[in-house]
Length: 223
Image (tube, rainbow, N blue to C red; front, side, top):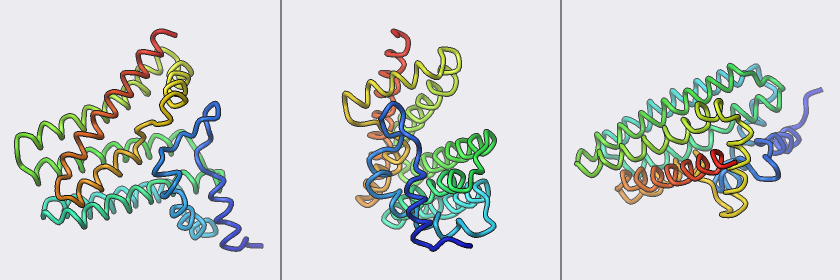
């Protein structure tokens, strides 16, 4: 028998990313806002013949085909709304995978790859839209912060041991009560887009990613 919508919603809310040593993997924005909304979408898809990888591809295409043109046409307020919507929908594939028990290494890789591809297109679109020296510098900082976060986890983490990187991140989060996860990255772009200065969001998000990623790497190397 099919479960009721609100029962599926409650199950989806329970299927958030598992904590790491008691520390949430999601950022503030996801925990307080995004997950509450994405779980509604997940509940609606749970009884349908929709697979997580299909959701990943759909959200990626939706993001590229809406956010990028809106930035290039200088519709910054609408672009900010679109970025936030994509940030919310970004959690659906993972929730659906955990709810339906369809998680796989390929699915995790596809989700991560499409996230990086979308973020890169977003950064490039903002730099093109603002078309100034400072915008390109801020875009570089944003891209470097994104790359550094990925590099330290996926590449350096494989050599040092994923556990050491995770433990270093846990120490930082327990001390600062904060981690600049991807939801924070997209949230900052949204907020500064509402102010028609999206490149400042790239600068702040990139700097936070750089600082925290280097701090995590330093702790991992010392341990």
